[in-house]
Length: 60
Image (tube, rainbow, N blue to C red; front, side):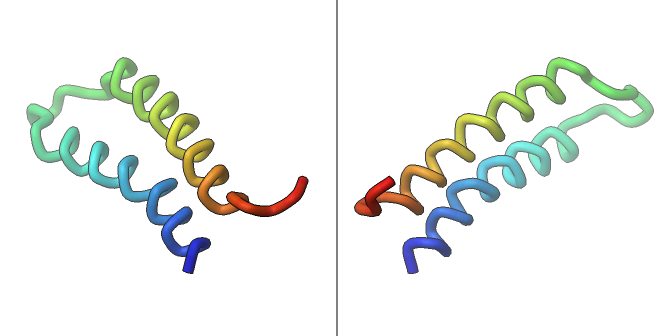
């Protein structure tokens, strides 16, 4: 069960952010590199949170 929660924590924020940006973007506005960079940073942060949840209680 912990694995499913970890995967949800890793993936859900990125999907929600990208859907929000896609819905609020003006037509034919091109690629916003600020959103791409923020999405990348968000992915790194939530990947780390997800891995901490997944490996919580395990000896490394």
